[in-house]
Length: 107
Image 1 (spheres, rainbow, N blue to C red):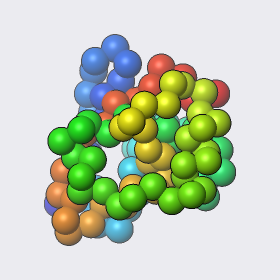
Image 2 (image 1 turned 45 degrees about the vertical axis):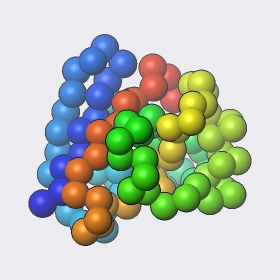
Image 3 (image 1 turned 90 degrees about the horizontal axis):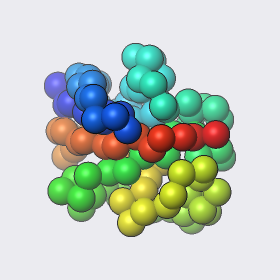
Image 4 (image 1 turned 60 degrees about the vertical axis):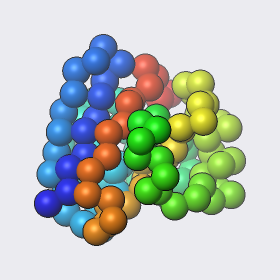
């Protein structure tokens, strides 16, 4: 089963086993991961699931859509080259593991 590791701003990590087809946001919210709010329920309309994808995993992800790109410009935390919305990253057979860093603030 694929694994997702969420790294908090203080460096602590939580690793989850995630079913294929699940988004990083849904896995985080379902499992009570601090710092991932997902206020819009995964519609790329709020940026409260903003994460920084570790560079070694970025190439395995689909390109950022126009909606995601626009929402990342509205994120509370600084937008970096590795910024993504966790609701737009779906675990699949090609993405068997990923490590993301959670920004210090989402609201």
